[in-house]
Structures are given as structure tokens and as C-alpha cells.
Amino acid sequence: MDQLPAVARVFAYLSLLTIGGGMAAFPEMKNLVVDVHHWMTFPQLIHLYSVGQLAPGPNMMMVAALGERISGLPGAFIAAAAFFIPTGILTFVVGKVWDKLKNWPWRTSIQLGLAPVAVGLAVAGTISLGKGAIQDWITAGLALIVFFATLKTKINPALLILGGAVVGAIALRV
Amino acid sequence: MSDVVAGKETPPKAAGPVSLMKIFSVFLTIGATSFGGGVVAYLRNSLVRENAWLDDTEFLELMSISNTLPGLNATNMSILAGNRLRGWSGALVAMLGMCLPGFAFMTAAGVLYGARGDNPLITAALKGVAAAAVGLIAATWYQLGRKSVRDAFDAFVILIAVLAIVEFKLSVPIVLLGVGAIGIFHHRPGAAKTHTIGEGKWISSLQ
Image (cartoon, rainbow over all chains, first blue to last red):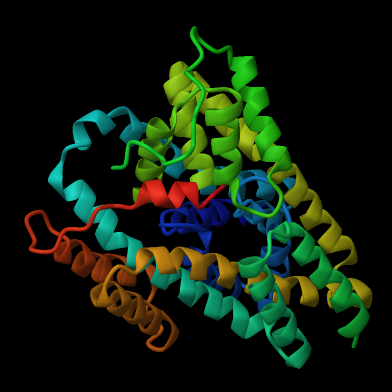
């Protein structure tokens, strides 16, 4: 319970870093959740993050699972509220004044200028996740197969993730 | 911004105000069925095609607001579309509908993980899930990255951002502000090179 204020702070802060998507925040999430607050180990964070790819809706709702692990059900509520409400209010306000911003010349500059930064942050986040998740040739092969299957086929990605679970259960038992 | 998405007809917009219950149920349905990511494609299908609450031009405009701000597209788009339909109460019920199913799913996942996460079979399955997730996320960003790289400068910005975090261990906000400022300055109003934002093409690639 005494962790709740810290949970609120950490997840509200992380939400502000999600420019272009949740992956941008991953390195900072690892730093805060694992290294600073010792709420869980890096493998545990990776497991919950990855399961989040299976959930419907916003793919960063995995913060609820992190909050649940840290402080039970109140932790799940606080983590999700802290992660989604502040950026939600910002979006609502900007949506209201958008007509004024629409022809502001810097708007396009911000959009074009931030797009490659967002890609860079997401690539860095993916590398950070990959360093923890890719441990041997089986996991490397699995990641490669899913990578190409996603690009070349129209299979629902959730099925590919479930396939990963089956392969893991068969081939990755210690 | 592109006004017409070639070859995609959208029905005329429905008349009259939409009830909050209807907004909630539509977003709850998307929130509960959008497995496998790509919520934006589900949103467009429901808001533009099935319910005709927005046309493609409005949808693209909301996407461009959503992309400029922090927060996820799934929730940002729910708020913006909900606001267009019924003001702040529409935004609120849309966001709640979008979030509740995933929240229940992930909270349950947290509880199960706490109870069974150290079971060797579960751990092995989760290792497989994590490896598959890396492949999926890399593919998503490969696709988005190909659309974002317009010139050598953009490629340079991506490289600098990656190196700053992975090699030099700089924190995300520093990179976001520092490299972001360079990127924004490069594309400042009146700069020699101007690009159009190819969102029309992007949206048609979601089909």
C-alpha cells in the first residue's frame, strides 16, 4: 500500500514519454520499475510486457498487471489511472483548441520533426526488450519467424504470440 | 493533409446526436475485440464505416492530433472521437469503453502471474511469448519506420536517438527533448525542404 504514491508518480511520468507509442517508454520503464524501485526483476517485467501484446485494447494496459504485482488491485487501478488519465486530459484539451492550432505553422514542424525521433525511441525500446528476451537460438529464431510472418502474411499477431507460447512451453523448459 | 483516400468510399455521416450508451458500447466492443494490436484499424472500421460517425478526413485529422501528443493512439483517438460526438462526457465514456476490457484482462494476468508465474511450464511459455513479442514489435516499427524515413536527415535522427539510449544510456526525456528539438528545427516553418504528411497513403495501408 505504501508504494501507491510512487506507483502513481512513476506511471504518470512514463505516460508522458509515449510519443508515437508505448515502446518509447520501455527503457525508462525498465530503469524505474526494475533498477530504481526494485518492484520486480527484468525477466518478470519482460513477461508481463509481452503478455500485454495479447490483450485487446491499448497495448500498454500491461501497466495494470505491473501495478497489480506491486500493490494488488489498488495498484492496478492507480497504475492504469496514472498512465492514462493525464495524457487523456492533455489530448482532450488540445482537441478542444485544435481549430486554432490547425494553421499554426509550427504544428507541421513538430509533427514532422518528432516522427523520426519516435521511431528511434521505439527501436531503442525494442532493443532493450530484445536484450532480455532473446537468450538463445530458439528465442532468436522465434522472434525472426514472427517478424517475417507479421510483415509477409495477414495472420492476426495475437495468434503468433500464442504460437510463441506453445513453442516456448515445448522447447524452452529448463 | 490529404482529403481523399483513393478508392475508399465512406458512407454519409449519420444525423442527430448519438447516445452516451451507444458510444460506450461501440468503444467497449472495440476495446474487447481488438486483439493483436492495430487498434487504429479497428477504430476506423467502426467509426467511419460501420457507424458513419466520422468521415475519413475527420478521422485523419484526429489521427494527426493523436500522433503529435503523448499517449497511445487507442486512447487518444477514443477521447478525440468521443468529444466530437458528445463533448467531454462522450470522450469519457469512449475512453472507459476502450480501456475496461484490457484493464480486466491485464489485472487478471497480473494475479495469475503472481500465483503461477514460477511454474516451469508457464515460465517456458512466457519466454516464447516474449521472443514472439520482440518479433512482432520490431515488425510494427519496421513498417512505421519505412513510412517515417523521408530523407537522410530522418534516418540520421533515428540513428542518433537509438545510439543515445542504447549506447550512451541517456534517458528517454533528454533524447526526446534534445533530438526532438533538432528534428523540429530542421522542419521549421519556412525551411527550404517541406514535406507533405502522407497520411492518406498511411491510412489506406491499414485496410
